[in-house]
Image (cartoon, rainbow, N blue to C red; front, top):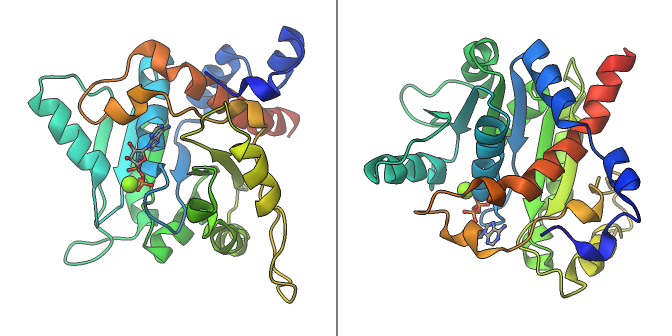
Length: 263
Ligand SMILES: Nc1ncnc2c1ncn2[C@@H]1O[C@H](COP(=O)(O)OP(=O)(O)O)[C@@H](O)[C@H]1O
Ligand SMILES: [Mg+2]
């Protein structure tokens, strides 16, 4: 289901773009507390759905202990998804932590993550589209920040602003933060992803010295709009549905794992 228009020429070439599954599991187990943020300062782009599939991939496919932190005060999609599936009698393979960003009892994301980093292999944070402080905390504490959106200007409009915020905040990240853009909800029968990648790489505001070229993953790993994504609100995705997410994770983690091995 990945983007056949950009399929590597050979199996060998494809494998070179990804960390082996074994290396991913070994690296995550050795370090623990691998924090992944999913966020764009904008609603509706596919963040929560991406969080769900990533959480299912790490827990179901890789057998790792996964925490999901829902910081989206407005919709709390992941928290509501968990409640829905528990009511349906489905086993939810990750642990949920609701993180209110405002009101009584609100703590910083930094504080929230501290115990989770030692208790879980992987911590995936749904940053929602709103709270800037929470987003900045993630950029300082996380190892990977993913920005999924559909290949449409309507959805990518805030990505440049988000990239600039992330770049400023990540300066204070002791470990370094890898940031990647990729597209979800793709119909690979059109060239929309190609068109949008090109559009996003152009700096429209000449006077803006802070332009950050969008750090795209390889286009082969864009995520389809296969109907199971839409049904997943009340239908538990199957193992096979996680496959394209597995390829994306292995691709995004290749550089991180190699960097650590070289250090
Ligand atoms: N890969 C996908 N394929 C098809 N539809 C998707 C996909 N990802 C998200 N969507 C749809 O996009 C809409 C917004 O998704 P959601 O994950 O709630 O976004 P966000 O958390 O960014 O607000 C939902 O209707 C969802 O079903
Ligand atoms: Mg959401």
